[in-house]
Length: 264
Image (cartoon, rainbow, N blue to C red; front, side, top):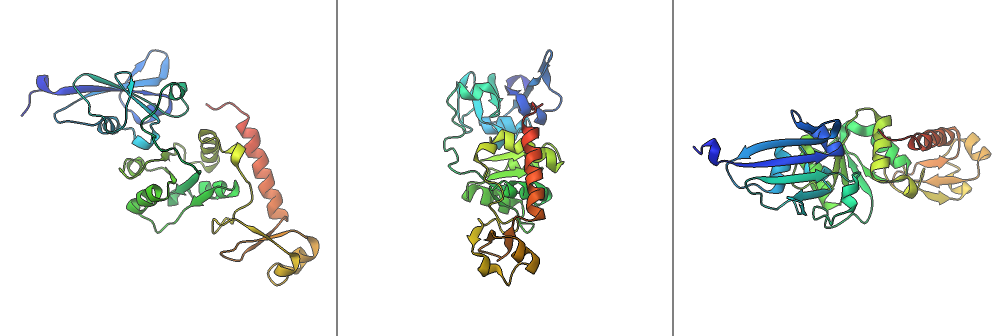
């Protein structure tokens, strides 16, 4: 067995929210947002192996420096290497070329695991293409996230560590109200949101329809009261700006006000 003296060592230094994943760490004095974890290894490891050994799932990393140089997840590590990792909210991400995200997403689309259904509904309400399906297992979620280039949102850290997952985020809170606030801030969603444009059941964009086309679909009172109607092309469900629409508007107003407050 290789003696400890001959084993290689590497130090992972995490910044910002990435410290959430590291237990029993050395931290900078007076700054809990900079954390270090050192460990030994016997065989060759990539940078991805090293950061996930420290507890951090790779989809949360948006910039990775090995001894001060931006590298990709597949970079081989050597004895004494210092690995620094940053998430997208850290200013350093904008100061270095990042080789861990070579293909940025052209469209913002989400895949939400079954334990965060209220978050999925909130994202749909904001108009974002969002999938959720209780029949999917972890392997399915990783595969779909990769194939459809969807951001995987989950409370399962192990799921995010699957190699197929490229874009993802671990939901720190189990409170749906906090979850949607975090996701809107992290991905800067508010400026590109198109509220109340998708079916909350089917994830399809709603289509405007003439009033006479829904005469046999909506309640008579609604048909007599309103003139503007929308239809889901998949399930055929009709929507109009009734009391449910007003409740959605109140929810959007509350979210807008909460976004004005400073994030912790």
